Amino acid sequence: MGGGAVTGVREPAVGRPAAGSFRPTLRFLGPVDGRDPAGPYAIRTGQVLRLLTRQLFAYPVAPAAGAAGHRPVPDVAAEMPTAANGGIGDGGRTYRIRLRAGVRWSAQLVRGVVAGDFVRGLKRTAHPAAAAVRPALAAVVEGMAEYYAAYDEAFPDGVPHAPALAQFIRFNQIEGVRAESDTVLALRLREPANDLVDILATGYTAAAGREYDYHLPDSPELHGSVPSAGPYRLARRIRAGGDLVLEPNPVWDPATDPVRTRPATRIDIVRDAAGASLDPAWSFGVASWSAAGSPPVTYGVSLSPYLTFHPAAGRPSVHLAVRRAVACAVDRAAVAAAVVAAGARHATAQFGLLPPGNPGAGDRPHWLDVPESGDPGYARRLLAEAGWAEGVRLVVATPPGGQCAPVLAALMASLTRANITLVPAVDGPADLTMAEWSPRWAGNTGRDLLDRLSCPNGVPASRGGLRVEAVDLARRALREGDSRTAGELWRRFDVAAMDDAWVVPVAAAAWPRTVADSVASGSARWRGA
Image (cartoon, rainbow, N blue to C red; front, side, top):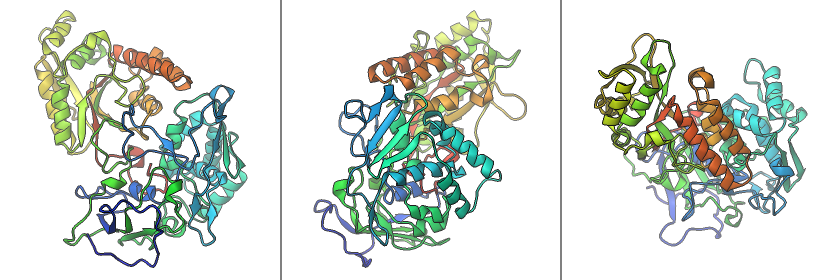
């Protein structure tokens, strides 16, 4: 850890951590451009942005004691909107989100964060750097899909220059999004959506001040020129190959920020530690898909791995008995241990599609009543009854990457006990794929799971994806306003989705540096939850 560096900014007395926990300077190992960090002390760009940006709702670093899963809390929103406080109306289709007072931008002329800043932030999600959140917002917010279509028509070649993007944002409105006043953001939804707060808690929807109009998302100029609303601000412009220095934001008031803290007068993020001691980045962890130091509990976790079968005439994988035999034979405990050995911070056996922390998670169909170590004898009986007494040979495709090898080995070894031989795909068709799903947000991630898995590999639900009945249950669960009823619908979804075993979950894991595939670079301003 470095010494107490002078930054030229006097830190306000308010908000200083308790004696013994405060440090003059924190030093983290970069890089800040989102490449794979080296070692446990690396800090991702998403963590940096968490200290600079504010959202309507946000995820605390650790869940509240006794909380079921990891859920958002109000950030710039003054309270969680409900029907009782007037925040939710029209049967769940309208939201009025009141903003808390005292949240300010560190601009040259200090001003407050207003509802219009969140309107601008939502409009900027049309940019390709926010492609990951587009499907959810388009499905939920009235007029969002049409706004995205207009953007794609205006900029068919992809990314516009900054003035063109600013003009587009100014002259194109989203029907269901408006600033009712500086202190109230009004949203109208296409249909009730009980995961709206979870989606709004992603970093994609962070407030964007008017200075953002001068820069493109995902640009170095953006990070070095716009004001901060969080506990720190950039003390130095980001330079290619250079370090990054954060200093206290003098207008940040901890009384207006229930999520973030400021444990140091300066944060250095360096690309080359040069033998210097470094600090753990855990206190700045983002408990979502970009988490770099989340505690080892199962919230916001990925299905890692799961198996998805490909129906093909004449192949064993087209038969229900084979798919169920695989689901019953696999030693989930051994695979979870292999996932941890491959680098996950935590992994557990997973029987259903809904990871821990989701409403309705934890149930499974009656035919899958097997121990975590699997039941190879039962699997062999299923195969024998269907005419495969001598066993089956299945071709499995795997994604690239060294982490897959030990996990695949554990999977192959456990299935061998049931006379199921897995052969890695080389050329030609595969019977199944070993894949991973990482949620784009924490908490209620059912919508993201459904979008990704309802038609795996482009296969319609009637020919190998989730069955139509399961998809219908999930859609009803997302619209349901009563949390208990929604949980029951999700439970029924999980059982129905697993019944024909086209998708077979194996383990749920929390990876220390995992991000969703479409946001792997981790460098856009909204990529930190």
